[in-house]
Structures are given as C-alpha cells and as structure tokens.
Image (cartoon, rainbow, N blue to C red):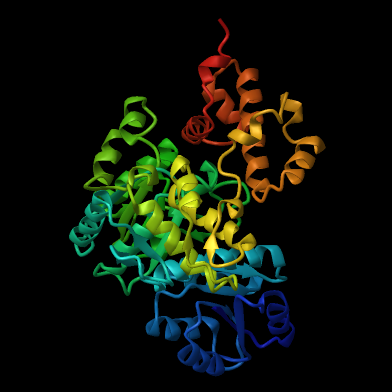
Length: 473
C-alpha cells in the first residue's frame, strides 16, 4: 500500500486529505507540526510528502532540508499561499517535486499526487532482472529469450557508466522499467530521479517543464518555474518519447548533452547542472532524421549507448512466461487462485500480434482475472483481443462508430474492453475525417489536432491508416 504524509497545522487541511485519499490503496499519515512530521517520516518512510510552508515550530523549507538529507528520492510537494511563493520556488530549486497554491483544488491535487506516486515507485522500487519466472511481486523484467538476455547484459554494462542511454522499442515493450533498472544500478541511485513523457505534454509546455521559465517569459508566466533539469541536479532525467520533441526543445537538449548548461525559457543566465540523461522512443529516429523531423547531432548525442527492446511477438516462449507471471502477480490482489493457462487459452494468446506488447498483455491478464473462476484460465475468460471483430459488421459508416447502436451491440456481445474499443474507433474516425479535410496533408492535420507530426504518424501506423489515400489526385 502506498503512503502519503501530510504536514500542516490546519486541521481542516489534514481532514480534507484523509477524506479524499485514505482508501484501500493509499494510507494517509498526518502531522500538525514539523517535529511530529519528521518523526513519522523516520518511522513510516512515506512514498510522497506534502508540506505546508508555514508550520508552528519551523518553516516548511527548513523541514524539507532535514527530511531530504535522510532520503532525497521521495517526492516533496509544498502547499503555499501567495506570500510564500519565493520559498516554494527555492524549495523546487533544491529538489522539491512541485507546489500547490491555497485554496487547494481537489482535481489538481489528485493529478499531482498520481504523478508523484508513480515517480516514487520508479525511484524507490528496484526492478528485478529475471530470467526465471518465480517472481510474484514488484516490477520485473521477465524473459528468457535471447533478445531479452542481451537487454540484461546491456543494462549491466551501461548502468555504472555515466553515459547517455537511448532505449528503442515499440510502445509497451518495457522501456520505462529498463530506465528504472539502469538508474537503480548506477552510481546515482541515491540521487534524484525525474521522468517526463514528451508525447503527453504539449510542445508549448514541454520546454518549460524540462528547463523551467522566468516570470513574464510568456502569457500566464506570472512566476518563475524551476524545471526538472534543475530539480534533478546530480541525478537522472528520463525523457520518454523523446522523438516527439519540437525542434526548439531538441536544440536546448543538445546543449545540455554537450556542456550540461541551459537557460530557462525567457532567461539569459546559463545554468549548469550535473544530470545523466536516459531517453526512450518508439519512433525510428534515423527515419525522422532523414525526414528533417529530428536533429542528426542530437540523435548521435543521445545514442552513445543504444538498447533495443524486442516486441512481444518476437520473444518466442516469453509470452507464456509473462502471461503466467502476471496471473500470479495479480491473482492474490483480485482474490483469485488461478494457477495457469489451458493450452487453448495459450494458443489464442499466441495467435494475437500484441501491438501494445507487454503492457497490453498485462492489461489482458488483469481483465481476465476479473471474470475468471476455478484454477485455470479458460479461453472464455479472455477479453476481446484487437479491433478486427469489433469493426467487422458493426460499424457500417463513420457515423455508426460511437452511436448508441455500437455501444448496445458491444454490451450485448459481452465486451469487457469497451473503453479501449471505443477510443480506438473514435481515433480512427477523427484521424480519417481530419486527413480528408486536409487532403492528406499530415502537417496541417497535426496542427488542427494539436499534436506533433511524429505523434500523428505513429497513430496512423498503429491504426493502419495511409495518409496518401486522402490526397487529391
């Protein structure tokens, strides 16, 4: 169970956190002053800490410095009023994860805590590199095939070296877990770690997220922001989906890799850091370089060491090993006693191409356990695999894709993956209609959709859509 420590002298704030987040997966610990908070911190070793900058016995900044000396890897989030903004900025310079302004907004808190808990897991839970399949808890890189054994060897070779690493592989192949393993086996394992998904953040905000910005740098920049590079000084920064970076952000990252310096957005003073970069992408960066979408000099800087993660369909018997691993891992959590797969179930799994790779397989095993009975996983317990049977005969026109008729038919068919089916069909409809409007112009379509051209190309490839089909002849 994950734990959250909240240190604040206002009883209403403590009660609010308890009501909102104390549940079967999260334990909320509370303290009314710095001394009690420090005691709980030592005793309970929480996953995330929330601190009010104004405490009765010491400042939140003083407490943060003391706690961070004990464990610098834990995400610290500050609660601040407008009068203590400078202290909050100072805390982020020293490595705090983020800060919130009073009055607190529940949705904002929840979103920030979700990210902080995920970061805490990455930093504090060391993944196991396992050729055997007898691990039942925690994060693990499971597999016995030759390609995965090469991945294990590569992690061992590069982890202790202060080199930039580029992880290549399709979505869901485990790049984040490999980055986590490299970090934990490195000399920076006790130093801070931050992760940024470059594809999940709009181009306009990504530069600020990584490098920070000065007050007045752009509209709504009413205060200075410290970027992840400064927060992680001395540690490791994981840049997931680096192929989706804009040219401007690519140029600034190149400078960091060259001389470990950068400037905040809107700033003129160079800032020097000591940060190891681990990057990952599911794109073919060489192809993007040839198309002028990715800087060749940045590619060569990132790919000092390259580790290729194989797709699940090329991992031989690892499919069975992984499926059984996930069944054991989640059986206890779901109150089940599933001990294995029937040959028929395994055959169905092996016939599927797994475009979502290991992540998709994990999701399928979780869904199967929700309906499974007995001790063996039977074929009827599996959710629908892929969209072929969904699109065949159900959606006769674009307008039918997400109609009440579509939903009703999928419910009648007993679908247990309706959300993914609907999202996939909606994306297909949206992309096709936009490309038709732009006559197949991908750059214009990406601009209209508000995504990068690289992300658009990736989605088109995944959905099997050819932009050339929409070009005017």
